[in-house]
Amino acid sequence: MDKVKFAVIGLGWFGQKHCEVLSDLSHVELYALCTRNESRLKELGERFHVKHLYTDYHQLLNNDEIDAVSVVTMWDQHLQPTLASLEAGKHVFLEKPMASSVADAEKIVAATKKTSTLLIVDNSLRINPRTSSAKAPTDEGRDGKIVSLTARRNIFESDAKLPEAYLSLKPLLVNFSVTLDIVSRVFTSSFEIWFSTIPRFFTSLVKDFP
Image (cartoon, rainbow, N blue to C red; front, side):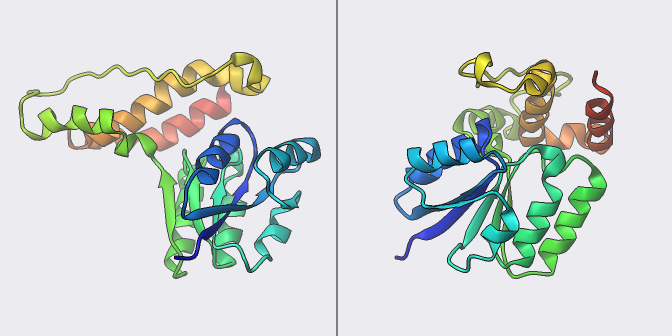
């Protein structure tokens, strides 16, 4: 079977993690990288032995050899590279959150429906074995009525490696957005009405965060 040629757009902390996983998959070739930071581009290009390096994702998408793209830019910059990737006929693996607003998320969904390519949003905790094991007793009715949930995820290797702006949002992102991901996987039916208000609330909260 031919390897799937993957590109990664956005080479921050999560972009690097995508590169690490993709480069370790036997059926995938990490084929191209893109970021506006030239020194970062060179660094990860050398680390992962990638020859096709771009500072403009439009140029990357003109490469017909590329089958699929990971979009790992900041969440408020997901829309344009995702739409461009879909229009270019690339399959898209989109880092969460899908977009910074409900309107942008709806634009991405609409664009996907107009293509024959695939869009997958990286709700990784929904397929995490630990999360799935937590869902089993709920499905079987052994947990009773769920009235509250607390979750924590220790994913940061070192705060020194994170951008200053990200550090300011770290408590919010770790304790709020990840909890929503877990809750939506395990207890969606119990929180259906509450979750319908979350995208707009979270967008407003991040926008107004000092």
